[in-house]
Amino acid sequence: MTLKAVIFDAGNTLMLVNYGVVVEALGAEGWDVEEAAVREAEYRARVRLDQVLARRHSTEAPEIFRTYMRFVCEEIDVPWDEAAERALGRIAAYHRVHNLWDRLNPQAQTVLEMLRDRGLTLGMISNSNGWVERLVMENGLRPYFHFVLDSRLIGVEKPDPRIFQIALDRLGIDPAEALYIGDLYSIDVVGSRAAGMRAILLDPAGLWDHVDCPKARDLSEAADLILKQIGAGLPRPWAG
Image: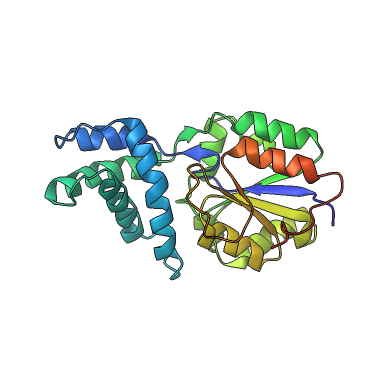
């Protein structure tokens, strides 16, 4: 069946972690770390976090954010002690006011324009804190999207297939005509597939070889995968 729509995650997909906030918070406690090191650590922490989320924990629960940051610290050899907890407090305070995922992916606008110009309808589904629409508006992305669904406002979180079905209903298309792009297997791939959609997992560091879905290093590679198939639809293995 021909692909008609591409739906994106927000955090770690179109919007990226503000690694500078993490560096500054750790620096205030005496650790001298580079943004590049934090970024690579976050990629590894993401895989570990997915194993926790697979047990059906909410991505928006405070303890999940704490676990995520603990994994990041462990991956850069920062001990999880009282000083790390204080650093977490600074990071969490920033997140409450600004959202830690407030840096625009530099590939985002180019990729969105490319897909839109090929006739695809675009949407967004995010497990978020109620601010994702504001973030995409502030970063100039809102005009690209037919809809933006924020789990806090909808009342349903990924991987629950109901939030994907809400998106499909708004699009008025069959599940097999839509594809979802995200960064967490247990949340994004499992959830979208449960709704009958296709999925691509973003794997920037090549750490997800153990999962059974199409993967792309970045948004540009994901777009290339889509555009190569768009004329004839997306046969297996895309359908999962």
